Length: 319
Image (cartoon, rainbow, N blue to C red; front, side, top):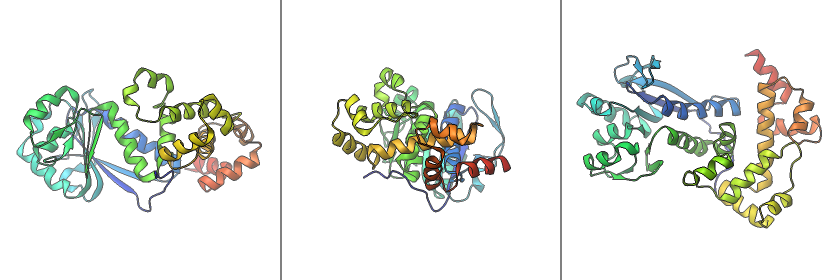
């Protein structure tokens, strides 16, 4: 059964290895969900550093300069090493890069290829005998160059301790997968709402990108659009033409909890965003998020976040 919510005992350490002309979209789509998650749980669960092979600055393909924290050889142990290259990847496929990647891979629990980063990993024999993907513009040449790698035309491919994704948009999916592995499915629900990743209208246009049960996708949309006056479980099921018990069964299979628990989580997540990002009164926030009164919301808020809304807001201003 999927885990709904969890807090890891130790921080998750992530190293981003950037090559010149790297994809800023790939970096941002990986990094911003990590940053947002830390703000959701009020603690630095995810920690990261930026590296280059030689420790020198690099520029993204759009010209954004990055001054790294250091060179790859000084990386130290980490949970994830994310290799981010885009244009000019063949130029960086050198003996120096291969040796550096091989050494760094021994210090990382999982090695990830973003965009064309999979090419550099394969060249360093880090994908031999593995299943992987790469940016689809180069997937044919990648298949020809590395016959020992089983190539899939998929957005994200995971094979033991190797992760690869097909480009900038799939980097967001990859980041969600990493986050939900440690924080549970609740984090994915929060992030999809925060970044509008599972908008129903968008899903209708790109169904091949959505692997979730369509009934649950519609249920999430209903709950997010009915927070001030929450629908009952029976009302949600009726609108979806789905028996309430079946709805709960599907929810438990996908998320690990019944639909009512997800609804409460969504409303409290919305409350936290209003507490930390607006000057609305706690009373007003409680009404907007479907609680009977401020006291009821405060109790629920403290049970989930470990502090009252007022204390959360006060602590934020003191930072």
